[in-house]
Structures are given as structure tokens and as C-alpha cells.
Length: 147
Image (cartoon, rainbow, N blue to C red; front, side, top):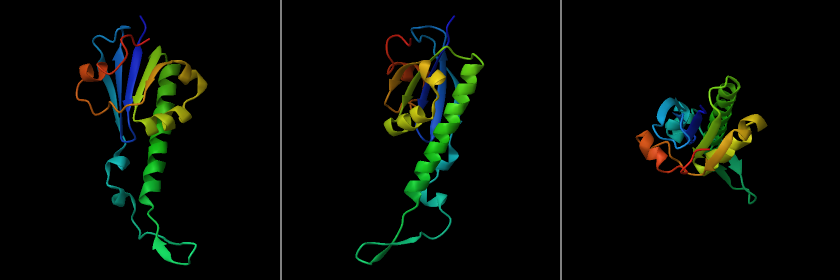
């Protein structure tokens, strides 16, 4: 029987659901990954005073590093999630993969996936579903058939 994993993710959290039925009936949550760094307010990621930059007119202003740090942290999380999914694929833990992610994070995740992992993807949904409470709520946003 084919196993399908559904990944619902954003830069702060990823949830893995599993279904052994093409219809996605009785889909169950298998794993939850949390990126604790992105759950912190941006200012808590930075411990030093902001750097100073100069504009073309010679005026100086503070540089906000928090946006860049959040982006770097999101890319790290995407890389780790993609590597974990690749190892699971190699172990034969799933046959098909469906990815539903916040649009920007979906692009980051897609960029980190190798060709063999991408070949298992049956659907991509550019929507953040990881905050939905129950598997049946996530299932309502997925295609009629998972593969």
C-alpha cells in the first residue's frame, strides 16, 4: 500500500501528516518540527546594537539586521527539513509527498530539495496550513486525491 506524507509548513513550524489511502481518509499527524528561533520576536534574535550605514547623501542611519536574520533562519529551517525529508525518502518511509507551505517558504523549501525528492511530490499548495488544529481541517484544503 502506498504511503503519502503531507507537509504543512511555514518558516516557524512544519507538520508531517501520513495517509495510507489515496483519498487521504484517516490522515494522521506523524511529526511536528518547530523552529524556535523564528518563534522569537525579531529583536530577540539580535544581541548587539544595530550597525550604522550611510546613504548617498552622507546621512547615517541604523541598519535593521532582524529581517536578514529571520530570512537566514528560515533558509536554515528549509534546508534541514529538506534534508530530513530526503533521508525519509531514502529509507522508504513514504511513496508520495504533498507540500502545503506559506508561499515564500515553499520557494525556499523547493530550492533546497534534490531531484529525487522533488520527483515524489504530487501536489504543491502555496498556502500555510500548519496552523490548522486537526488533520481533518488540513485535509479539507487538499486535492480530492493525494496522488
